[in-house]
Length: 202
DNA sequence: ACCTGGATCTTCT
DNA sequence: GAAGATCCAGGTA
Image (cartoon, rainbow, N blue to C red; front, top):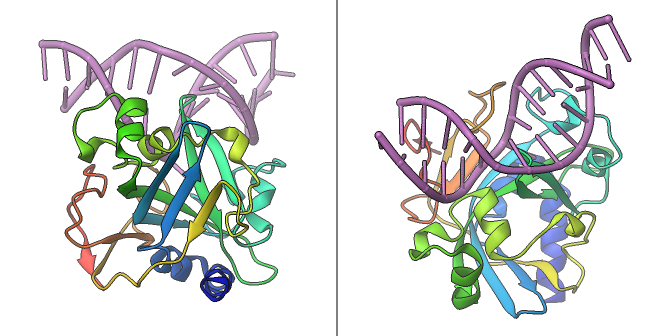
């Protein structure tokens, strides 16, 4: 397992878009006071450096965003629409900038907790969106800066490579919408349903 | 100081 | 298909 975490560190130290694809199939685990919740990553988006007009790195110059240039594996967490927390994993080559937005999980552990936190009956509604999964796993802004590769309560765990990966433009943004930086596991029902069409296989 | 626009989700019609 | 909830950063003054 030390080996697995090492390979994750290596994955996250490469190009952000490669990391976004490689994170599919990995697990996001959170041990909170209430109990353990965990899910398998099935949808991601890459946000690049200053050359990516949709990336916070190019849009803001705040201390929080600066973490995108920090050590690969750190968590970049921010609030969206004043309501939702979004989790990103810092990933870029040495000296670079970039992060991967975790957009959807397939619930693996702690389903009862997830249902309680989400107050939604269907399992498909628990983690099928970036704002949903942070609520289901109880990930808040206080998680910002966490090293997800350290063995802490909030962590990433490497998993088998996903075989069938689909790619499309990123969604919910207004710039560089055609850049093929959204990745998901083909056919997985836990992928966010919003604007699912218009995609292509790699 | 004020205004605007989001990497969204839910609950309506 | 549309809009409200609700916060924060950046631009403009």
